[in-house]
Structure formats: C-alpha cells, structure tokens
Image (cartoon, rainbow, N blue to C red):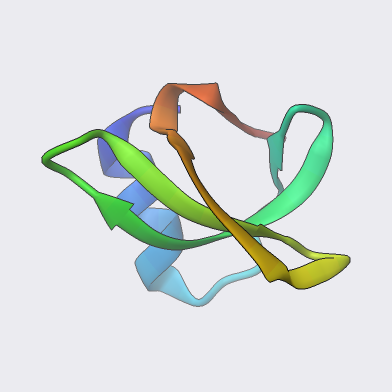
Length: 59
C-alpha cells in the first residue's frame, strides 16, 4: 500500500478490507514522516502496533 491510500483509508471511516501478514486490520493513524501505520487486529483491538505502510495490503 502507498502512503496516500493509507491516509485515505484511515480518515474515511469506511469499512475497507486491509490485511497485515494475512490478518484483517484497521488503520488507526498514519505517520507520514516515518512511513508507518498504527494498526490493530479487528479481533484484538487492544493489540496496537506500528508497521511499515508498504506491508499493508488492500483486498
């Protein structure tokens, strides 16, 4: 995924299917400077992590 699309998804409020390492995740925040996205697993919302934007896939 690219930076612009990650920002669009995080700000849209729409339900967009995004995966990280095969699991469905929600993008909470995008850190443009470091090219990272704060994500959480839809099944474990308390488990947040920062990952490279390029590692996210839009289904």
